[in-house]
Image (cartoon, rainbow, N blue to C red; front, side, top):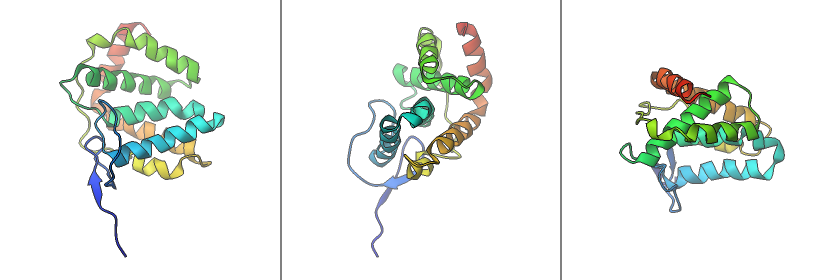
Length: 168
């Protein structure tokens, strides 16, 4: 039996098949990790019942793949996605309201600071992707979002105060 060669994702730190392929422009990931993420997105776009989960998927993946802490758009991405993640977990927002929240927050993105990710994530897209499109998809994404928010506990006060300063 031949085992596939694996590589560690520089974003989330999990192991994925060592494949060649695209990655995000500034969210640092391995091609295998990005492929797993895209399998979730494909399932969500392909099934209207899964679309309410979409923003949780995007926000969770984004904060687990922070990119270069010296790059402004990477810093803003982590801050914005972490703020929206917090708001989604605290309030059951429908997709349009969730998007409206992000648009409102983005008006204040220049004030965000770089936030160091946790040393390790409790769950990653590798744990969720096998459930893409199944009856467990939404529940698994919700659990992933919650554990990731908890993994960022060191920054909860900052994010809460930043949201309050935006007036949202």
